[in-house]
Image (tube, rainbow, N blue to C red):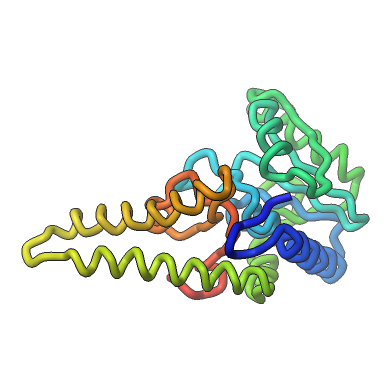
Length: 238
């Protein structure tokens, strides 16, 4: 189990995940789907309460690991053999996902082994997906509202994030001087936000923020799992 010290407890994170699984099950019933495949970075982070990060390329919206959640309650993690050990040991530990892996090059062969695994699990059930895949229903727009209502633990995480990012930006602003170039200011802000992440990382042993926030994400770098927030998704940015 994971705590985010001073922010939320492992019990609160478990409750957050359970509430989100309930929303997904209701969604599957409404859409008359047998399951949903989540591959986008924001959905993966949201579904795992921020404990998971399926980024490979930090600027990509699509991750290297997919979560397949079925209407009968079973849950699967689908990834290459290069990613799966880390995913099961770090991102999804204790969350009840069954691993299904393929060799890294099999996703690019014909037939696509990754798609084959998904179809074997589905056994003819209709599936939704948040990225375009043959034979599945694209449901990203319909799925997004599930993220809009914040859980109690998400509210706590937003408040922590707001306080600490505000302090970081204010610290930079107080040091600005006439004649500074925009690029220099941008770098200073990025470094300030990076320090927010570093402070969290030192206490979390690699469980960090879980954000999808452009400049903030660049400032935080790879150590940004743990809060699992989607500010763009809830309309607070952009």
